[in-house]
Every structure is written in structure tokens, then in C-alpha cells.
Length: 189
Image (cartoon, rainbow, N blue to C red; front, side, top):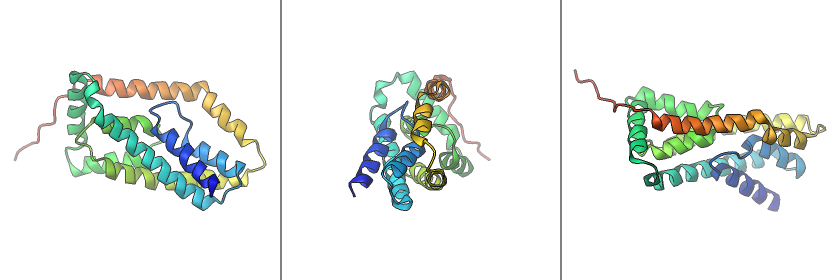
């Protein structure tokens, strides 16, 4: 039982961190192999911890959004008006959280800053998508148990490419709010 609490705690903390945390799948793979955990509960606990962490991260950005410059908040709200201008756009946005290969931290941070974006549906889509991907990674790693996966995780964390992607995602978040978006004006028939 203690090992599953460790899984929850480590995954949760990694998903509350705004940037530079290792990917959750790599944490889950490492912990399931290191502690010889049953895959199914580890995956479910990982999904719950990751989703909870991201939801709290988004809400933290929402709560402290007043710390950002007003022009940045206006640009982010105008961008949100484009993302939510129709049900199709909302479904597409939710789908992005389901399948996105991008770091989800910055997606949740942006959603948190955009006060008109509903966080619960995004978090549920994220959880559903992560249930699929974590299952694939953890199950696949169990098959490759004999390899040194800890080395793979460490290499991934220290990888210049991984660090560069995180930096680019943070720059992208800043750039999204720096664009002078015009608010979406609904078309009237």
C-alpha cells in the first residue's frame, strides 16, 4: 500500500509543477518496475494523481492570474473567445487535451489563465487520454523489464531536446498571451 501512496505523491507533485518535471509515463514506468507493482492499480492511481495535479495547476494559474499584466490577460481572454466560439471548437479543444503529445503543463496553465475555459471537461479528457497512454507505456515497459529503464528515464530528463521542448512550451504560453487577439464577435444572421 505504501508503494501506491508513493506513486500518487510523486505523480501528483510532478503534475503540479509548472515546467521541467519528468513525463508522468516515465515516472509510472520507473515506479512500477522498481517496486514491482501491479500495473492496473498503478496506472489508475497515476491517472488520478496526474489529473488532480493538472487541475490544481490550472486553478492556481486561474487564482493568481491577476499577477499577469492586464494586456496579457486581455489577449488570453480574446484567444479564449476564439477557442470557445462554437461547440465544434470546444470539442476540438477538449480533444487536444485527450490526445496531445505536447507537455500538458502549459496547456493547463493557459486554460487556467483563460477564465472562460471550463477546466473540468478538459481534465476529464486529459484523464481519459492518459489512461490509454499510461497503459501502453507501463504495459510495454513490463515486457522490457530486463532493460535499464532507469537510465532511459534519467536520459529523458537530462536530454537537451526534452529541456528545449519545455522551454519552447513556456515561450509558447507567453507568446499566446502576447499576441494581440481581437475578441471573437459572433456572426448574426
